[in-house]
Length: 462
Image 1 (tube, rainbow, N blue to C red):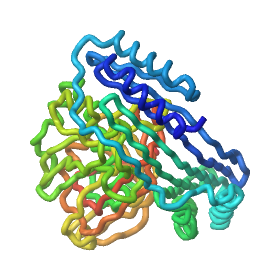
Image 2 (tube, rainbow, N blue to C red; image 1 turned 30 degrees about the horizontal axis):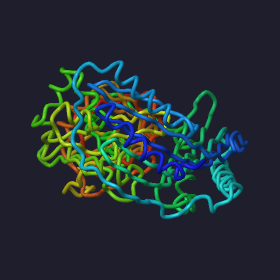
Image 3 (cartoon, helix red, strand yellow; image 1 turned 180 degrees about the vertical axis):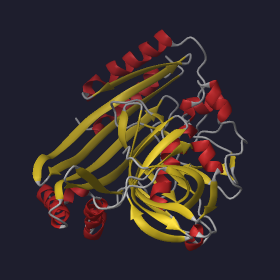
């Protein structure tokens, strides 16, 4: 049975059960994709698959029930389970922000990946493996992972919303590890697209760069740990805004945490007057772009920081209802196994006015960091490892260094942004993890940034 064949059944269930609870929704999905993994040229994964399943969510007196299933014949039983669970736990008030019901069918698919044979995708991975290995005999291992997915979703709610939408996504991850004696260095490149398989073709130069960085780093001096003025490129800055600030803007992290809610109070000053930060799926064509979220809320663009002041945050219908704010369309689930939670979509820092060359002016000794190797956050604290870095001496880019980690407190770091470049780049390589749902596609964007008082460590935490 296909999900389209049960659309009429969904509509009849909405009519049958909508008076039983305050709210419920049904989300059915059909996913088709490929997964390929080559480790040092050896095929470890080579598979295609089709997954069909769904979820039922219900809310009653503030309590939620959830049931997932992969047998469409059990749809009504699972809806009954979700409704019963919501009634068991609900003892307060259901507070969901209002959304205008709508009925629509939309597609974001520009190209169907199923027209590409699996062997062609495997050969692409083998080609990039050969490129990584060809850079140097000091490259001792490589990894190339490819994945694509096409997903069709039907969403229906007890309020009368019925949305059919479909999208496709592609991702490619390449890495090379180089060794010299006891020294080991790794270089990585990740690519993603919501548009076309062709976006993963002809990436030879970027893939070569990943291996070259690993090999070159073996002979570089380790940066001297200290506090520096740093300049970071748009890719590393995009990771920073996503990991260090974006997660703190997700309202489900806030409304049950009074201390953090007070810290993230609307109107608080977070940075210089020229700092603008946004999140939104309405930005077209990026990895985190869509037309409706997994609660049927239309995509928006939400300004989080305006002129250095906190002006917004990201919401599900429940968090918006509990905080008395507007819905933003940020309720997302990885797939039908998981309930939607508040997630970023595309997160970016607005373009600044400073010429990139001028970001280096009057820095006697500093660090220029590009690309990202890894990172972690813990509340408002962060640590990121740069993919490559150079010292800055007397306003000029000087000798390259390795093992550059940037760490600090996100609120202090935002205040320490001295200048924002007039460049801007999107990074489509992101796979975000939260609440056990890892690998959700997101976009990040930023100009280059100049930050004072940055803590730079000489050891890699990536």
